Length: 298
Ligand code: SF4
Ligand code: SF4
Ligand code: SF4
Image (cartoon, rainbow, N blue to C red; front, side, top):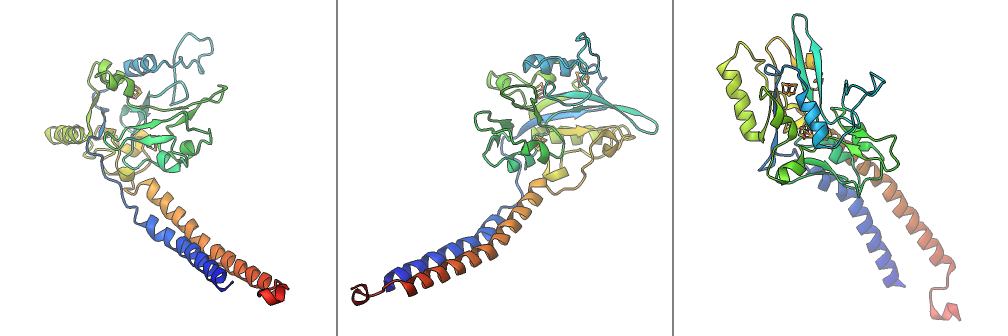
């Protein structure tokens, strides 16, 4: 019985140590780096003429139905934002003295909140290219990814019997065939281009340096929210906050998510210790009412 008691105490010690050790192990999870072969888009608002060829090509390449929500008669595809039929959209923003088009799609964040929020790994970020995509066979439809995304990108097919999460996946089916995303292929102004994120960033800074009077000196996505693989240039007179980019902090959302999760784990330590203490009391009480020696049993 002494041995059983030792085993019980040892088990308690391991359980408690595990509960206490969990936060420090998770706390070691630090900022994420740009993947080695990271790919993405560079959108230059100063080049875009708002023709929406990219929107049309995206729908065709991704087999998405037209969005006739705002016109009603099914004659015109006119999405005003990302939705379950629209993986990219061109929006018009007005400043005090100027207007600007902005293309919106998934930013393929370096540390994606959607991936961190999905408890069963249905959203995946590729280790080499950093492409963020949805694995339908794993998804349970909880939509945590939708709530977590700071850019409101993932959309849910509410009207489908087997709904999907819809978001830009950088046309990975076209990349697999050696092609490029549909939006970058058709853009008549090269306002959106595809490439390695490091090259796109260098290109963006070169454009700013060669024409500082035209450009806002910031490349949006270089540092914001831990960095994104899709990058943006805007005109000097259009600050990014006027273009629907409301996040300027450098800390990635998952850093906050993880610190909260660590806090929750840490919060488990007290209940776990209490559970162990109660279990020990129950164990001791049971020992006190059960015969502990062969003579007592007899
Ligand atoms: S923009 Fe949203 S959906 Fe896209 S990778 Fe970032 S968190 Fe995920
Ligand atoms: S990369 Fe493909 S899915 Fe993404 S916005 Fe461009 S065309 Fe659409
Ligand atoms: S195709 Fe190019 S120019 Fe036309 S709306 Fe799209 S990004 Fe702008």
